[in-house]
Length: 352
Image (cartoon, rainbow, N blue to C red):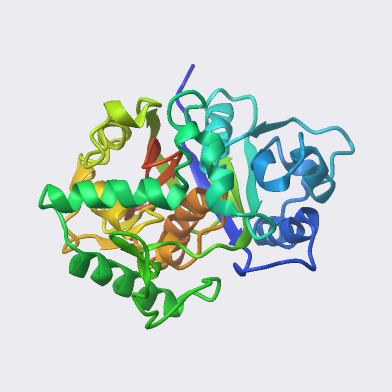
């Protein structure tokens, strides 16, 4: 089988909001689906494969993704799949589908409404149920454990963490979709050493992208964002056997995706907590001087759970579409303390 080139040709996202009580998941998704289809001129019937990412725990009901298909349109019958993960992993599945030649185009979307319930507690469903979950640590407490380990190892301090938050949210002032922008105070302690400014906002949102293979991509987009490499890896489930100051899975995924072949000019990192950006920058060998990190503001500006990773890929692709970037690195994560990590390298066509 001859290898095919696959590109992201369109990206759309909602305006991320603290609450969307007035919208169902379907109503939240539909505008972004229409936007990516309109951007390419495709109709639903033209899409060869559809894949989504979401979480039943957020929705509070089993097989909740089937209701979201009302927004896609499943008649006539479509080729469809779903991952109980961030939408970045749905994009990976769609990428594989296009590589095999089973489809030429794919629609990928993800969504999450975190506002209805206590997100810090909901995310504990990811923990080992026998040894860790009975201790009742929530997601912020686990991130604080990681942050303290980084401080103890001399990799960062509270002042440098505050600077990450300030840089990210200042960058978000040019992002019309961001939930938090500008001079957001570092705030009060949440779980030492993390303050409110070190933590992501809780909110609702959705995102969608369209992938296309080979010649189809150039027909649909003036400057496609070609996926030159993509890989995902995972750490051990038990936090006690991991070095929380490092992310070998990110490093391995980046190596296999070709991220270290030459520097990227842009990096969109899925680091919900300031301390996690420290871990990722070390694992990805980013010094912040040759690579612009999270020009969108990143998850510290908007963190729609189950869509934030797909947003990182979409934001990186959008910069290539606009000509603001030639080579971009995108990262997505899932699970506590950067347990599962995906890295993609995107490139635009050479400039004439």
